[in-house]
Image 1 (cartoon, rainbow, N blue to C red):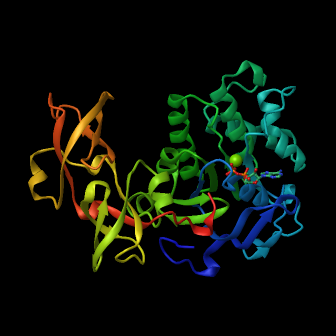
Image 2 (image 1 turned 180 degrees about the vertical axis):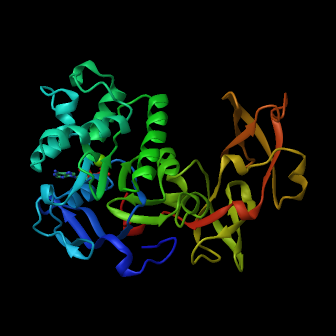
Image 3 (image 1 turned 90 degrees about the vertical axis):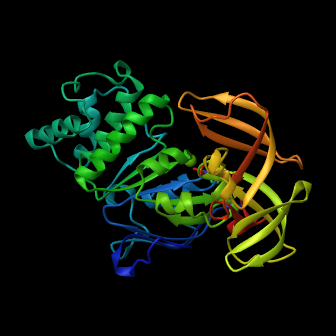
Length: 373
Ligand code: ADP
Ligand code: MG
């Protein structure tokens, strides 16, 4: 496992130590998980469907038991501690509102379970509803609310008992894009205001980049990288992370030379690409070189770039603030290029494109930590 900064063991609020989980003795859903969560941070588990994110959250919440290793909270093992004694708020996809209770009763439920009733409970419910901007809607039933409002109620229910930790599993997954973006801002605002620790699950890399203090990228039940959004985006440690987070063009090739941090890669059409080597690669190794669409240049500054190629544009898509071009290199490799609108080269279907070696990373081909995905 890698981290942006090493964390002293005593600084861990929650710690996964060599945690593994296999259901019914089958293939491991989560394998060799070591992860430290800091108090007050917004940590996101990001990965494709089936990569072990929900399983990780379920083990932390106490709905599933690890088959290997241990999870500790403030230094104490959670083994054997039932979910209702873990003091964690949960917003899970499959943990819907109670349809027969109104909004206030739903939010009050966790307080009731903890034996808190009367005016004190009432005041907490009202404060939680205010926090999620639902003041005055306590009397409504869930079926009288929009999807976004229902998720706000779920959030209020997870926060009302002032938990140490809030776990959220794709809470915005069912909402349309605009509503999702609005609620992302809300969730972040609430988390900052309360200073509560959040562990958030999503398969949406844009959501992860927006919300998180740190991101944990999963594939095949194995952590691929842990880091800040900026580190994950700018300095992916393997080809999986480079391809999954943000958009990336991948050019397959063979290393022909290596000189310190840079290397030269022969790609289709015998084109030579200069790239920054990630990891232990040398001449003869199969690699994938990645370059993001926004880092491919088409303008006048192109003359100074070490990678310059004639390309043929075979598709242009207009996206309002930018356009996306599909460019084909002489050897047949296709690249997506992003250009600011207004700066797009007009007319011609032939174009010179270029990019610098710093922006172009070469990774060992096909390597995903743990061999999964
Ligand atoms: P994610 O949340 O990243 O989509 P999950 O943690 O749900 O991934 O699943 C990880 C793996 O574990 C998948 O292969 C999935 O099919 C399997 N899995 C999840 N839950 C169960 C279960 N209750 N019984 C058996 N297998 C499961
Ligand atoms: Mg899931």
